[in-house]
Image 1: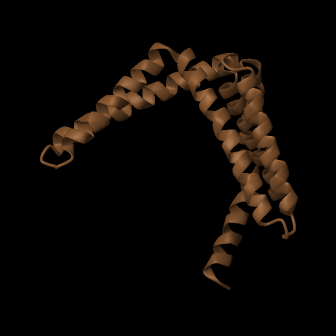
Image 2 (image 1 turned 135 degrees about the horizontal axis):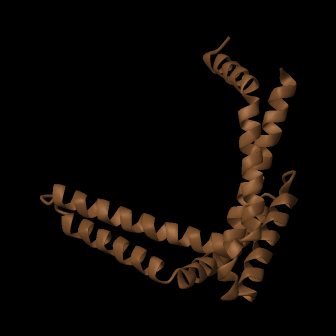
Length: 186
């Protein structure tokens, strides 16, 4: 038996013994996801505020590192990047509504470009089985991006919160199903 196979079996045993914890975590994520769906604007603003705080922490950390490595040839550039992090984080905290609106527009355009790339990729592999799913995923990404832009700038108030809530729901349900499968394997 290979080491990989033994490790997989050991992991499955641990999961089977502790399936309840994973189930509880899944239920918690589902509950938090539903709460998030009920307050997408608040979730959006909190997440953007958090991004601002992270940018400031990163900038301050980089400033400290700049003083520790001031002999480095790129120290001035390192410090400039740190200052930009701090300025960016401060602006995000100062106006989280504008920040969420700009981030939402960026996400919308990103979805459109990803959709176009998926369609091009599907065209390249159109002789392979399953290429139609790429077409479907590409069209869906474009539609989502366009729908977000059609409601922009107002979509900036709810899109990020909605995406976070949906991700929590999906993650929670995935954990629940994994826990149930592990329990049934016992």
